[in-house]
Amino acid sequence: YSTVIKAYANSKSHNAPLKAMEILNKMESLYQSTNDTSVKPDTFTYVSVMEAYAESRHKEAATISEKLLSNITNLDISVYAALINAYTKSSSSSFSSSSTNQYNTTVIHRAEELLADAQYRYQYRNETTMKPN
Image (tube, rainbow, N blue to C red; front, side, top):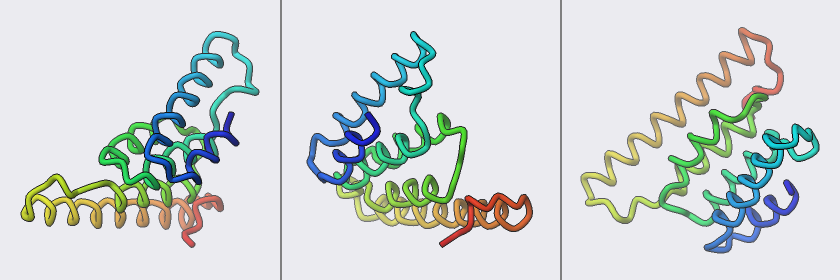
């Protein structure tokens, strides 16, 4: 399942995020009903869905990626990188110019928050998977 989701993320197709999310929902449902750990979504799965949204420049990429973040139990730097990417590639074209400036400020602020958190986790909590790159 995760490899197919990653293929959708790499395809940059306009329907890739919907297909990726469909597979993720199926995985979550299967895991909940069977407790089969082989279908349990992992960090790679969630990051791949985030990437599918970002690469398609879906206007809700950042919002959806933030929601997916809450499902990830094993955070690493790839999660934060995917989330920042989702913010930077989310469409702001539907906003007025003042709203676009506000959106860009939000993107920068969120990216800086994520970087600071990663640095803190790496430096003070010794979470080696959070080493900023």
